[in-house]
Every structure is written in C-alpha cells, then in structure tokens.
Image 1 (cartoon, helix red, strand yellow):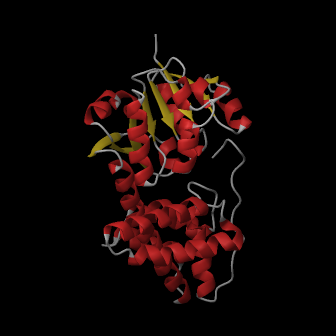
Image 2: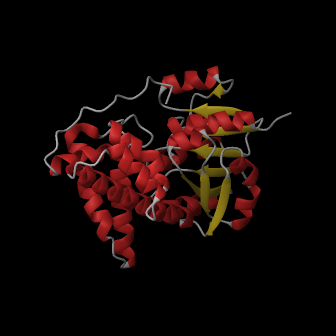
Image 3: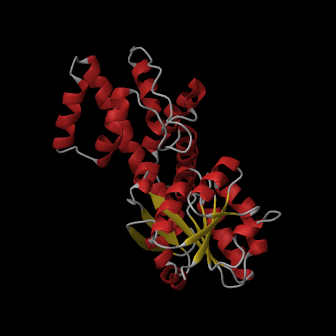
Length: 306
C-alpha cells in the first residue's frame, strides 16, 4: 500500500508537487484556502481536507507551499493548524521562501512539541516544478533531512542539506539574489539591443551561445521578447524576496548593491499593475525607462492550466 502524505498550499508549485508525488505512488491529502485548488486535488485522485490540521492527520510528513513565512506560521500554529493535527514525530517540510529567522523560530517551537521541521526551499520556477526539475535546499537536523529524502525525491531531481535550521532559507535567498541579477542584466542588455536596432530573437540566440549564457536566457528571454507575462513566478513575490535579501545583508553586514536596484524596479512594476504577472514583467519598466512603448503583455493561461 502506498504512503499517505499531506500538503498545505496547492498553488502552481503545490499542483506540481501533487502531480509528481502521485506518480511516485504517494496518496495525497491536502488543504488550500482556494476551493478551486481543492477541486483540482480531487480531480487528480487526492483527498481534500477541511483544514491544515486535517491535512496533517495520520501522515508522517506534511509539505507546506505558501507565499510567505508569516502565512506558513499561521497555517502551522494557528487555529486548526498543522500542529493541531500532527502526531509526535511527524515531519514538516516547508518549501516557502521564508525569512530565515522565522524558520529558526518555527523549528525550535515545533521541536518542543516533538515535531520535526525542515526549511525545505526549492529552486526553480513553477514550469520547472511541472517538469520535475526542482532542487530542494534544506535546513534543520541532518537526521530529519535523511528521513525525508524519499519525500523530496518524489517531487525534485535533487536535495541538498545546508546546515541548521534557517540554512535552507538563507541559501534560497542567495540563489534568488543571483537569479535576479541574471534577469536584470538580461533585461538591460535586451533593451540596449532594441535601442541599437538589433533583431531581438537573433540577439538572444547569440547571447545564449556566448560567454554570458545562462538558464535565465532560455527560460525568460523569449518571455521578455514576446511580452509573455503569464506567471511562472510573480512580481509581488519577487519584490517580497528582494526585501528579505536586503534585510539579510543588513543583518550580516554584507553588500546588496544589485538587489537594491532590482527591488526598486520591482516596486515600480508592482505600482504599474504587474503584481500578479510573471517576475520578468519588470522588463516593461526597463523599456519605459528607455523611452520605448509599454506593451500590454500576454494574459495568464486559464486557471488550472499553468
């Protein structure tokens, strides 16, 4: 008989987790505040739960996939939260891009209740998650990480133990900081190329074959060219992450020069109405700064298809 696993938060990432965990023969019981996501779980052969506590009942592991660590703490410790439904010894794998200090606090508080917690951030877009091309970066007790390897293998291509609680969250912020730099540099170069009269697709092909090549060019270059801002990530989430990066740098006394510029551009994108659009919708802000006409962009694909 296959093992039952809980999941709380079934957005774009969560839906991809469900798909791969089902393929790995796990039975899923899950909760989301969005009823449509609950319906999708039922359609995929899973079992909708009425509350986070119910999603945690009679399972060894619950995966959390929500936008912020504040939400994560609420669904873990709040009324009808995961902690209420958890049995002693259960594992919580929290894939939220979190404030590291929140991960440390959650780990300590759950440890007092006999519940194991790993800040288990994932690196990759929702499209990469759909393809099973995610990497897990975890912080917490190493024994807990080893115990959760099979769960991570169910929805990712690799998992790395980074150290004590909070280490996974810190690593994810560093990954996202470097990724933001790649996207900002690509956007700046593509706008400069447009102003210079270079054909965009041809320029992108050369960049992808040159010394500056990166995954970002393959994943996000076409979206910039086509104004395709159907979401794989979201501007509002990227802005939140950039602020966490700056906070981390300030606390540790490390420079965060690039991400401060990036954060201001993302703020402008949010104010222009791109909050729910894909992260690289900030490309229109860059184009506007160059005196180019803002494009409307391609709308998101219908719900449940993205």
